[in-house]
Length: 356
Image 1 (cartoon, rainbow, N blue to C red):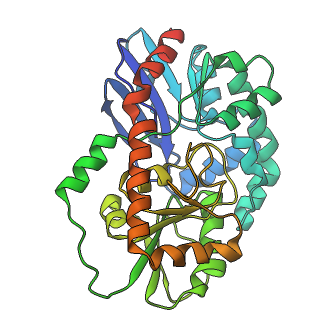
Image 2: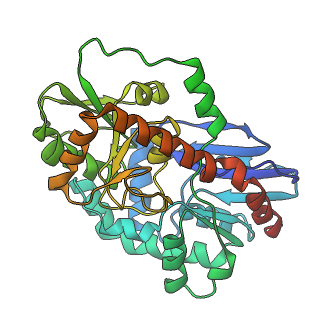
């Protein structure tokens, strides 16, 4: 999701895309355009055909997005809008680099379609990303690690990179907790939650780990819930439930006993962990999952990279309610102090000013 800040500019336009949801509207004086990757099956075929072979491939954005008056700051939610802006003659823009996207090329592909697309398009995509980074007026990254990787691989970008970690609107979560109570689970089951877009390869890999390496170590009274669109079609144990898209994700987090992030891949920072913490939940994660978050292990979160031990860390929390509550309170405090959007509003404003 875009980093948003109140702005003195006449308009700040943010471009993003989604497979299902279109959106246009103002959020804190920032105008957000979210287009569909494709409209129907025929459009999807031509989208991927073009994506395979076009050297000037670009994600789509509504044409009216370019009709706003000046002065305008253009913010791209990822590098693959680059050719779209280039065709429109727009040279000044902010690139929001949520991931180092060329790292995603090394993630395992679980379908023949993904492997085919990667075979033909991965090197082309990396070239587009590097061009987008080189030409960007300003670059936003989520972590010091991502800044270091970009600086080491691309000349003359370090001075235009600003680190603004993924954050949450802490007041929103605090208010939600004040207005909602935790319902007692009538089944008596303990619930372990994982959330995320399941078309994203690192999240799919995490689901495979949950199904194969974590959930089978528990009896049926410990239920693993996986929330997110497009769950994978894989064999899973009886105590794993795929919920699909969940309308009120905060209510689901509130009802869960423990939240987990067993990720092996990815870059940037994981919004899911910030959300778990803001809701006062104990979290068990890998160091990769919690990358970019300034935590203290065994104070704000439990970090476990050995998947043969990961289940044990969950079991420790399940057996000790006081421990769960302590981790949850510490996590919430960390979010309030370091990952509230209000902390970075002024810094983002300076990025926009430098782009105009």
